[in-house]
Each structure stands twice: as structure tokens, then as C-alpha cells.
Length: 583
Image (cartoon, rainbow, N blue to C red; front, side):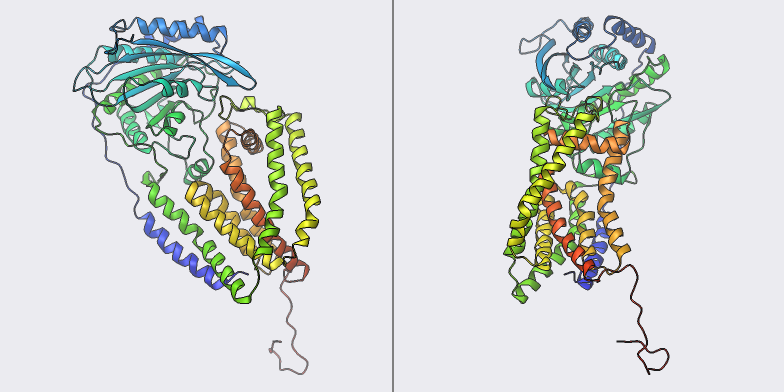
């Protein structure tokens, strides 16, 4: 089925084109420096954070401590100079947003508090900057009080300083409930256009000068332009931004987007947004109050970043580009590179279709057999989703993936997986006879699977190119496996097919602070409940059905002896001279 020469030629063409594409890596220009450096008193911020923890030590969403912390933040923001005035529309500058969000099977009452600080220079028509500090914490986790106190101090300093862009200081609730607070805020705020969002997520709760910048949203895009500005501004302020994720980690998180920062909903809305944190992108962790030096460093660097953003004319929106060797590969070029990686597969599919037509082999029976193989896979996915609705699989938080602590791998989860497997196997046993009655030869079904696989990859590239990064290794591996003559080569192809999924589980486990097994469970559970949409499961069903059809040909070749453990021994014909080989 595989034309090896044509396949290798396609890889050669794709490789040369990819090398040319990589020559387009670019470096962004350095942003202007702020007009005046700011001094943040770490002792004042630490004392304020201590008072907040005294009022509300554990601010679990919907708890009394959470309510008390909202009142405390409102009082602190109201005491800032100018906060008692009104906006041009007659609204107070300090406001509350009270709303509810669904967490599991219950509704949680939440409150945002924010302060509007208008621009003091310029024409007043520039987009504003939003500064966010998540206020709530998961159960038994003490963190983030310093960010809330730092937000108040930064608002006080900017309220008495000159700046062109309007500023908005927001204390969000529900950050641990699917980032419900920032999502509600973005859907309701309309006083001015938002040019950028900077989130302080326990940014000072660390040691030394290292700071992490999260810029990835939940739709595969990253705010690379804002991240580049932030890196330079933070370095000017004496901080040491953590290194970019490796290329594989970026691609894996682009294929299956996941972020716990309040910046993620803003990125999804097309707004440049980043989160500054003392940890890699992940759920909050228990931390004691940091020392005054660390607070001052983070506060002054954050103030410098806002001052830089006030000087920047235009802040580019999020893109699907990646960073390679501290240089950016644009979204358009990355999209072309992904298509080039799929080119050999597409060429092989076109060649298989042409050969089927020349041989007069009907494609319809193979496609019908392929559809029957997809039925048990779809039944298993639907069953797992229904079990999630029934409560055997943890439910989403405000429609988004919940914290890992809310998705434990328990006996109920194992029961759900067991039921799903039983339904899938039972459905296949029930439909196998009908699939056989289709009468498709294994070679014809494998060719139909290859053509459908190429069509699935092309559709994935058009809809979500990043998802194709997980599909391609398996697609190429199963195609090569239909032609190799050795068992170890088939085993190697199987390993290549599984490797991206294992790598994705490892990346997710690392982000959650857990092992790869839990990372795999978290992906399955959050996908089954519907928190990650339907596009991924649909592509997964199509991919597995196509691979199943092509794997059937591999099994048939092995039964016929075409896939052997070792190469056959070529014996010398009787009477032939020494060194002669049988033909």
C-alpha cells in the first residue's frame, strides 16, 4: 500500500521547506523604558498582607472568609486618594460585582472588587491596562494575600502619578473555580477598551529574583508580544524571568491547551494578557508570607512593567506562534511547518487513491468497514461522558477544567473507566458481524483508512493545527508499519505512535505537580466531562478508527509471514558456484 520511494521523496521536499521556514525566526524590539522608577515599600505590603490573613486566612470561594476578604479589599481600595470620585459616566470608581458560578453540583456566590484609575495625561482615548490579583484560595491552601496587598499599594502609587492609559485594579474571586471572576468581569466591564491584562498570582510568594511569566490561554494562543515586553521590563527591574518552556512542551500545551492563570480567559477573548507568578503555570500552593526584600523587588518590577506598557503605542494580541532559542516563530510559518510535516502522509494517500482507481477496486466497502470500526469508539466516548454527567467522573468548575485536587483518581473513576471499556468491547462484538458482511478486503480497508486518515489530518490542520501535532506521529507510524518486513520495526512504529500521548501525559502531570499517570487521568476526566469541548474527542475517534483499519492489514501481513522476527536465510541453489544466491 505504501509507495516507499514516493514517501521518502515527499519527506525530502518537506525537510528542505521546513529548514527554509525556520530561517524566518524573529526577535522583537525592546520596549521603551518607563519615565520614572517607582519605589514599593515591602514592609508596608507585608504588613497589609498580614492584616488580610488575619481577617480571612483561608479564602475558599463562597466561604465567610471569602466574603470578609471582599469587604476588606473594598475598604482598602476606597481609601486610595481619588477613589471617592465618580467616573465621567457618574459611576463610583470602587465597585463590586456579585455573581454565582457552578462548582461541581452546587452554585457558589462570588464577589469581584475593582478600582478605576483614569489617565491623567494625553487625550484619554488609549486602551486601558487591567491589573488583577486573584483573592480566593483552594481549601487548606494559604497563598496570594501578598498579591492582594500589593495590588492595593500599586493602585495607591498610580493614583498619585501621571500616566496616559487608564488603569483598572481588580481583585477577582473564583480564580480556583474555572477563573470565574475574571470571566465575569470581562463579560460585564465596558468603561473603556482593554489593551492588556497583567495578573499578579502570588508573584511575590517566592525566594530570590526568579519570576515566572504565563502567557498561554486555553485556545492554543499565547500573548508572546506582551510576554516579550514583560521579560525586558522585569529584567530592568532586577528580576530574573524563568526560561521559556521547551519546544515540545509549548507544542504539547498548544495541542491540549491548559492554564490555571486568570490571564487565560483574556487571551481567549483576544486580549494580550500574562500572569506573573513565583511558580510555573499550575494550581496555587501553600506558602508563608515572603520577606520584605522579595516583595519590594516584585512590586517595583511590576510597577516598571506598567510604566513600560503606558509608553508602548500598540500591544499585539495573542497568536499561535512559539518561541525557539529565544526567537519567535510566527503563527503563519508554524502553520506551514505543520502542513509540511503532514505532506508525506497526504502524498501517500493520494497515491493510494490513484492506485485503487487504476485497479478498479471499490473504495465504498472499505469506508463502510471503517465507519463500523468507529461505532464502538464513539459508544465508549459517549458512555464516559454520560458517566461524567451522572457524577462518576468529576465535573467541571464553571465550565472549565477544575483544580487537580477536585479530580482525584478514586474507585469511582476506575469504575467509570471499566464501564466505558466494557461498553466499547460489547459494542464491537455486536457490530463485528455487520462489519464483516461489508465484504471489504483488508488491503482495501487499509487504503480507505489511509485516505480517511489524510482527510482527518487535513481537517485538523484547517480547524486546529496544533491538534495535528499529536495526530501526525501516530499517522506516520501506522502507515510505515503496513510496509515494514520486521517485527522489531512494527514494535518501533507502535512506540512512535504512543510516544506523543505519553509525552502529553508527562507534560500535564508536570504542570499539575503530579506523575504522568495522574496527568493522563486528568486529561481523560476533564475531556469526558466536556470541559475541553468536542473537537478533540471527535478527532480522536476518527484517528483511532483509521489506525484500527490500517493495523488490521499489519496483522494480516504478520499471519501470512510477511512480517518476520528475522530476515529469511537465502540458500545457495544445488550445483551453483560458491557465493551465488537464490533469486
